[in-house]
Each structure stands twice: as C-alpha cells, then as structure tokens.
Image 1 (cartoon, rainbow, N blue to C red):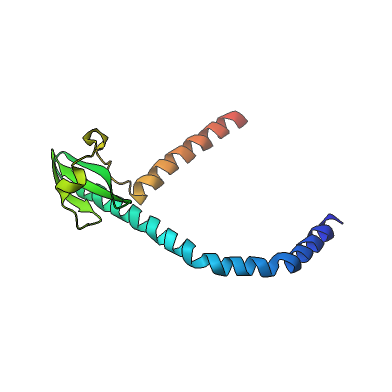
Image 2: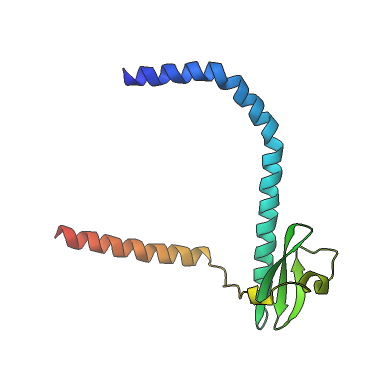
Length: 135
C-alpha cells in the first residue's frame, strides 16, 4: 500500500510541477555551467601556482584579488616571479597592498598511489581490529 501511495504522489506532483521544473532547468542551465567553469578555472590556476612553487627553492604562494577575481602570485624567497592566471597588471601592482604574512608553502600533491596505499593501510587495520573482536 505504501508503495502505491508513493508512486501515486510522484505521478500527481510530476504532472502538476513537471513543466515548471523543465522551464527552470532550461533557464538555469547556462548560468550554472558558467559558474562551474569559472570555479574549475580558479582551481586550475591555484594548482598551477602551487605546482610552480614546489619546484622553487623557498617557493610560496599568495592569493590576491584583481578586478574581483582571485590571482595566485608565486614567490621565490621574497620576490614575486609569476601569477596564475596571467593578468595584465604587473606583479608589483598585484602585491603592493597585499598582506605578505598570508603567503603559504604549498604541500606536494598527493598521488593516486599514495591515496591507495594510505586507504589500504587503514582498511587493513580496521579488518584486523574487527577480526580480534570476533575471536
């Protein structure tokens, strides 16, 4: 009985609100896609800056904003050397009023092999603990 009630309600509300959902989905598709692409581009720029900083001696990264968009400035020691994404402003203009204490040293990226190894170790530990409880 409960199953038929759920199906009946789904059909009833689908007929009633279905057209509205379709119109809303069509209207919001482009803004949602643009937002997702913007966020992916920001992540890509952050990763590129971190990757470049890990190859430098005393490499650090600082996030600043240029025209409302985040820009990651890569430092080698105390000198800015690159920005991700590349913008028309000079590095000196980007960092002139920035708080340099906010710079951070990026950690090396964790590879898939490292993730599998660490997960395998945790899973094996849990399995051993469960086995001890059943004995």
